[in-house]
Length: 154
Length: 112
Image (cartoon, rainbow over all chains, first blue to last red; front, side, top):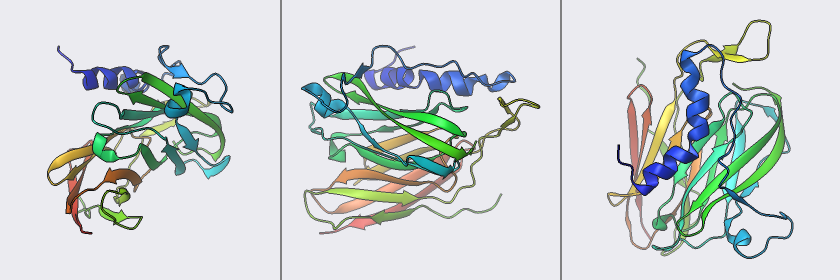
């Protein structure tokens, strides 16, 4: 089967998605999922340098969410959106959640600025939300935020 | 099956030529993950099929300008905000599809 670049990225980014959701045929859902190991991460989140500044997604989530059925998530990034250099996609993952992969937005240069807001379901507990962006020139980068969910929403 | 309404499209900021708009879209849809807890444990099992919106696609003047692939973890009645840079007036169309094959769409005219 032939895959174009976007199709390949989509499949790899959503690898955890397949693991978590593809398990519907077996009784228990898989929890042992992990982010792909070629993702770049800022060395010091408080002191971003060089490419890290343009490629580390900034996540806005509440510190504590009472209702796990509607957890607000917002991602912004200061990155150019030009025809030959732009953010192609952002994928949201919560590794240890029953449904690890939340969603993936595919941007175009006409998006103008990479940002996205949505609400998602999460299980109760302390969770790390990860946003993985795909830059057309500089590969994949991740940014994350930790929060606590009081009432599970799965 | 109950007839569902079309999505609502709202432009959050003031519309100016060349600006990046924040487009807020909401769609009434009672999604469900279909998960439940395994008896006497804290592990989830699939109890019933998931029902959810699995895709949102935005078009401006007929050209695709963004799309969102969703899992069943996206909340019921989702409200999604995404960016759109507009250089000329046109028609914004948003289409949602569900994993059961339903389709919902709305359009909004963008004028300066």
